Image 1 (cartoon, one colour):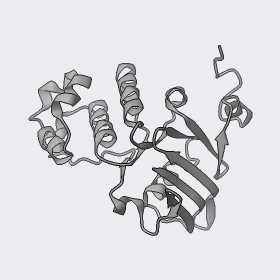
Image 2 (cartoon, rainbow, N blue to C red; image 1 turned 90 degrees about the vertical axis):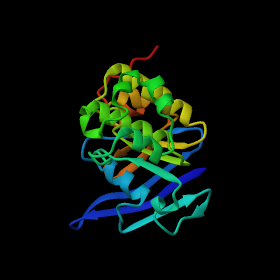
Image 3 (cartoon, rainbow, N blue to C red; image 1 turned 90 degrees about the horizontal axis):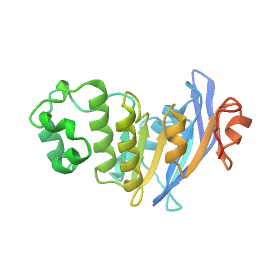
Length: 222
């Protein structure tokens, strides 16, 4: 699967927020979007998924224009920044709903074993984020969008999520955005920087310093 987002123009109250956007993701790769807070990363994710309608956009799947919102195709899953699973759902029901193995989940996150028959409202904020990220990554799809998946996670759990991302990208195109740039860089095959409303594909990591996204010396080179 090759996903492309092109020619995006987004306005909020006559102010142009995004313009000249191009983004490409494909099966076997993690494509990342970096940028300062408020630069439009979440808006770009929502446009790509089809939740937000800009003035202009072109979405292509395998070089063919997509004429309806991506989420209506059933081929994509999206992890938003907010919680999306209702508080009253039991974890056992959630795994049945998404046709996922509870035992496989517990192998990765054994501290959840006590929660199988609990409702999701029993989880902490970090535990809930782990669950929703796992489900989004593992559920059947061709394209996965992850908006801030590492938020509220412990360093140990971040590493486990990164391992799952590396496994799932073998059969999915994964698009990810997070302010924790170290983890983004480590997990990514392709990186786009969103700045001044447009995207720039990063060919060398030092460009992140050149474009003032990172302060000089932030990147540790061996």
